[in-house]
Image 1 (cartoon, rainbow, N blue to C red):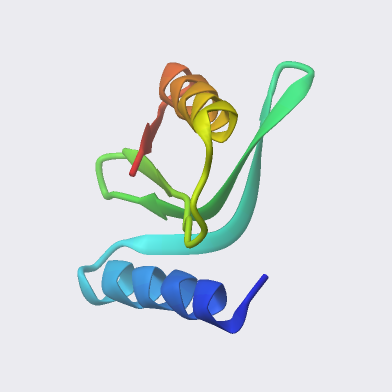
Image 2 (image 1 turned 120 degrees about the vertical axis):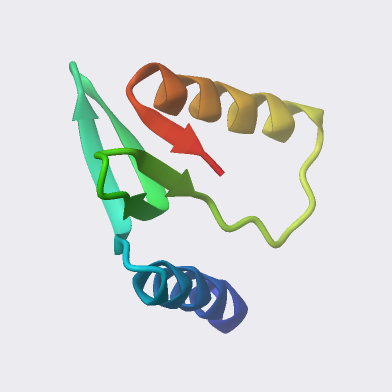
Amino acid sequence: MSDEHKACQERILCAAEEGGFSGESKVRTRVGRSWIQTNILVKGADGRRIGWEVQLSTIDQSGLRGVRARAAKAAKNGITPA
């Protein structure tokens, strides 16, 4: 993970905390026999969970399909992808 990637994660965490939300980095959430991993998981007072994925590099079509699949899996399991 690059310094720039870490800095982006830190900015998201700081913004969440300044807004009164709690946040964690590198969170793995168990879903049945698999996992959902998010760079940052922000939790709202109402229980809403928002998963942030920091993406700095370009991706091709197959990478985009993977991102969409992970976002759909997160949404299906109560994590709003950001």
